[in-house]
Length: 509
Image 1 (cartoon, rainbow, N blue to C red):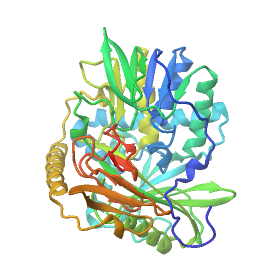
Image 2 (image 1 turned 90 degrees about the vertical axis):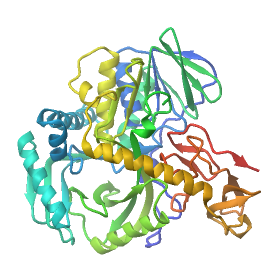
Image 3 (image 1 turned 90 degrees about the horizontal axis):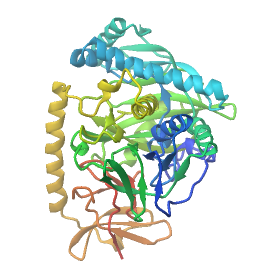
Image 4 (image 1 turned 135 degrees about the vertical axis):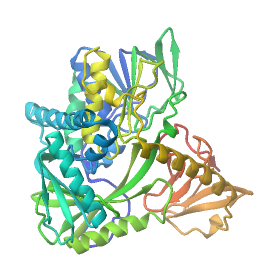
């Protein structure tokens, strides 16, 4: 941890990643397995663990290192309280489907809890009540409607007129018996069990395409190796293979931020998230007998908005006012994909490709939705019934009116950013950049992106996103190039951090 000061940690780094994890080599030959899983997060590792238990030969391909993506940057709430959702689900999909959604999340909570107890996993698991709260009259009314939805669906909840913080609220709604944990300590044990049982993991192995030969999928890696299999699970956050599903037009990327602090005031327990803007999320995790408080929120569409460092500063100001900061230990950001109707896509990527399965669009609730995806995809592969198959099917035909409006606005926004990036005037000269500073520049008459690292070395890339050609913007807070159109993110030297792209930015020497 940092020293006892209020200064912001210099580099974004999640607390969870301090866990020592198993490492794996790159794929260096063609292989054949029963199931190939692309993505080493909660969905990929849980599915691999379950499928291996059933006797299948399984391999995980991870473009970077396992558990370093969204799973490693979560707030790790294990809850069925997914913001304001159940009143909306009842209105759009009916009580039966709304209840199925709740049951899927509740079942995943129980799955995680039972597995922790069965394997005696030390992962800081604790049961906590979850709360959503409103600070405005408009959202207070929505919370009252949500409380009515809880009653209709049989959810154990309660309305409150206060929460145990110095935050003036209108009302709050609790969901009893929810949980929190350390996600990487939990998933580390599943990874070790998978490897011990003969499962395969290949890190630094980027999947770029899928070929099909006599209904046998073959994953092609960036290095040209092939993985033949009976089924593919795409659990790479954004589907890397998207030739027919058009997932980039059916989801949008939302960026949010987390700071982790030790506080002057004691943390009262529970998990909290506001439903109005700006979003504020609170929970704690135990560290060496103390409470490390995680404060999240300040979300915005990826690649858009003000200087990203301001989001960290806003969370710091909220933490200071609410609990007082004794030590500012960590900060990080995360990116979540939100589908047009707010339900995840879990199942066959298209109706014509039943052997290629996908799991994406968890809308910030990846611990339960990711676990639901793993169990559902396992059942699909083993040809077992699952009550949630139709609800989450990517080929479902249910459409809610707000999702259609969102679809139109997202794609109009994309067109605007395509034009803006191409026509933007960029006066910055790369020689003007100070150490640890980045910006779009004009280089040899073309738009480029430059970052001068702490040692003074200049890194220049072509900022044209390799997905569909939008121009990436500099993310000061995380030192990344972020695409405002579909949410692809790259490191300062152009390596892929988040899809939908799977190709790095072109480096300019």
